[in-house]
Length: 335
Image: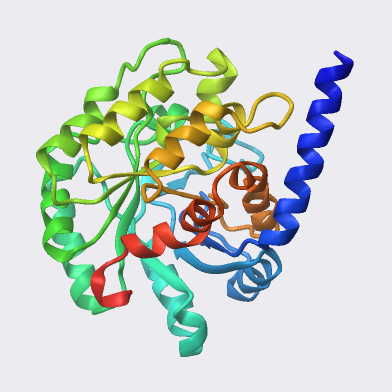
């Protein structure tokens, strides 16, 4: 036990020295300008948090649903899971993002890479809405998403049919994304809270197979905190992800917070070798995201939490994961 503790201390000291030497700069691949009530701290707060955290560039999107404050609830909920009232698809979220960006000076605006998200993913008309938004704001949108499909309790709370990553409405969107050179950030849980197997794997694998010219970013690698609460670490996630990355060169992975623990780091905060090896094997396919929603003070905490894992990677790979990979995935006309 003493030897293990000493080893951990020595490793931590070594990683600290490495981190100090490397001085990471970040691209945030997953950030929501508004929360589930379509409210935000605003652009000055976001820019301040990015500067303090060393985030040079950021994806930015709205939230595709709005949480209802139900007539029967005396207190306004603070989160989508705060009570049993439903959520509904909300297209105006993209207008809030566009308006905020248009007010920025050009140099500040260049730090942001806006993704369209305000559409119903079970509506086959959604692709027409996306086309209209692309025409309304020419040259602004650089991606699609985060698209909410399988998403824990939010799926059950959202009005309408259950969204799936492999439904016909999304198929039309993937074709458009390939035509317009737009990456798609997709939230699609790999399983439910109860099933200890990749129950929903086909829902993400089918689009990967059928749309080889569409670049997919898998949010949280299919994991979620709600799944972890019920079944802790999914032992099947690493082998499944390894196979998908091998089979589908159009798959990229967002490592935002629910992947950090218990996957990238163990209970002592030490990087897991199997995950380090996977990232080294596919160095261009992983990126980091804060996944903040309308409140921005925690961006630094979220991004810097990855430093121990980055420190375990070769320096060149760490720079790719922390900064370059997300930028390289954007449309060619903005690189």
